View 1 (cartoon, one colour):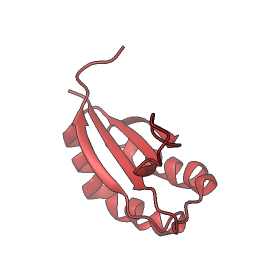
View 2 (cartoon, helix red, strand yellow; view 1 turned 135 degrees about the horizontal axis):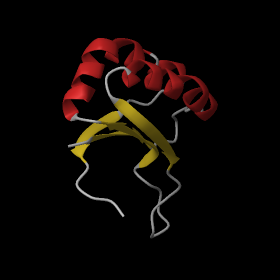
View 3 (cartoon, one colour; view 1 turned 90 degrees about the vertical axis):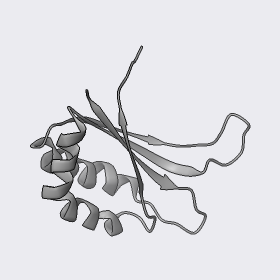
Amino acid sequence: MSAVITVLYPNAEDATFDMDYYLGRHMPMVQERFGAHGMTGWRVERITGTPAGEPAPFSVKATLEFGSAEGFAAALRAEGGPVVGDVPNFTTLKPQFLIGESVGHG
């Protein structure tokens, strides 16, 4: 079963986030390093609010797609240091990671 890794960056007024660096350097590095371990794709979304018009609890969401949760675990073991070590180059935020299984889509 395929695995979906969600990476969430909190919405904080005093935070910095360099989206150009994230899209131009960080995510290509993630694809290069994690691709050898079964990462099949990624998507990044800038979160702009909630349906009620309130500020969202997160500002950026990245989704990493893997063939399996084991592939993600192997990628993290082998390449997690450099990937996570790059975070301070684009943000002052601490990312939160969620691991899920794809069970349907439309």
